[in-house]
Length: 351
Ligand code: UD1
Ligand code: UDP
Image (cartoon, rainbow, N blue to C red; front, side):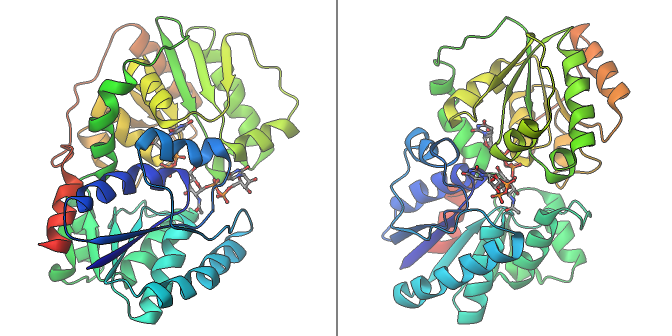
């Protein structure tokens, strides 16, 4: 059996790594294709090192472009690879443009495709990722979901039961495996700090919105030190804004997985708009305040530590105040977020 994996952007790597590893224990030939959607060392190469992933067999080198151009470039460059490799299964991960583009290529070539992290829905079609999720799930042959809400969303869209398999959260497999190593990383941070990440176009592409967010976070940094590793999209947007950053905010380059995980595990609280960070903070039991009006990962709110803040920055200030006063919400870990999701995927594919 031959299985081809497609990765392209930062959040794909930690999802694919455990599946590659679980399948390596079986009699399977594996091919790893990197679309090149992310290409900076700190957005790509460093994850191969930190996650112990094999180098990609093929890099399509698509780089940055508009959504349509990037999607089309992945499709044009990926099609000949699939034709040449003729895999039995193609695995696509998450909700980035590379995920949808690769799934479309496979659907047209009648090559079976499995979507890892299927069924998530924010209900917000202004999010590019929501379009990617809907399209990918509508054409994939096998929909591997991380949580019961994923199954429910797919059923509501009329997906037959036989195409759905709940396997749990592969991103948490990586976390479970690497947390002991991450905890050994030296960190130059105060005893208490807030970790911040921001990269959603809806937060960072509009200068006035970004300025408001940075000011609000700057105000919070008077009460608790802020550590902010900056995504390249946000770095570019911030460069155009001449904002004075207070010394109580430490701005960093994007971090490798182990260093970022070390910070998450030690953080007093996290402020983010990342999908994956909402999940990781839930597993770690660290309070997470999400600067978005909705989430495709509702179990992080119902079971975990996530609170949706939307645009209500006064609420953010209040919530941070609560954490600083030691008022912690009860939380738990969602079902099947147990470090064994990738093994369940391998079992389904290989038997
Ligand atoms: C992409 C995904 C998003 C995911 C995020 C993870 C889509 C539609 N978006 O958003 O779902 O949450 O990755 O980080 O697929 N850039 C660099 N170096 C890089 C990569 C990007 O400088 O290695 C800069 C470029 O200026 C580029 C911009 O970041 O134009 C945005 O990159 P892109 O991949 O288009 O979208 P992300 O915002 O990274
Ligand atoms: N992450 C990282 N370094 C950083 C920021 C995030 O390693 O500087 C990790 C984070 O722990 C999670 C993943 O990247 O595993 C989330 O990716 P991102 O926030 O870029 O994308 P999203 O999940 O929003 O699609």
